[in-house]
Image (cartoon, rainbow, N blue to C red; front, top):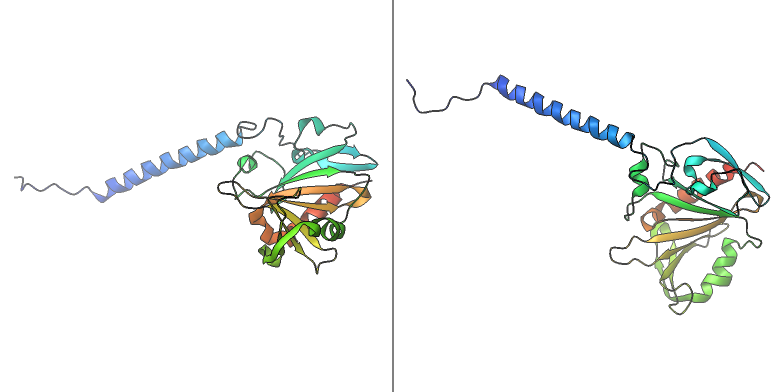
Length: 233
């Protein structure tokens, strides 16, 4: 005789349901990971490559041996001499584009960890000290502010060619660390630009998100060492 109460589901049925849903979840994750793993070019620019094979490229009188997956432009992955090179890598692992990190190379938010580099061999080199004291300081306005990583910041005169920028520097470094950053705007990721001299008369301009500036010392050291390691002549 029924007493009007529903019998509880046996415990083993709940275990069965949990196992089924668990298997479904694992299957979905596996299919998704395989999809991302084999979809090169779908989430990134078609000119990117995951091939890390080194290639020798000449800029002016310098030769560089570079992994192809760090070279942004397809047209620059050639043995033909180049006037300049555009590179990129992900911080802090210093890796170029590959199938496992391709989503990171489409990241455009403030959280992006990508570092973009422009390599060239200018006829005239200007050091960080010269830029700071002979150029940038002429356009400082207002009082200095505290920047990330114990840097000092000055806003630039709106009537100058550096309008909308802040220059951060560490004067007691030798040579002084100097970087330009666009002043933060609502919903617009802030870019910082740093210029360094490399071996054989090469110059690198590299840019990154403002959020990475707190690690400026480690970033600058790693970037310089990485780029110099590519110079073979």
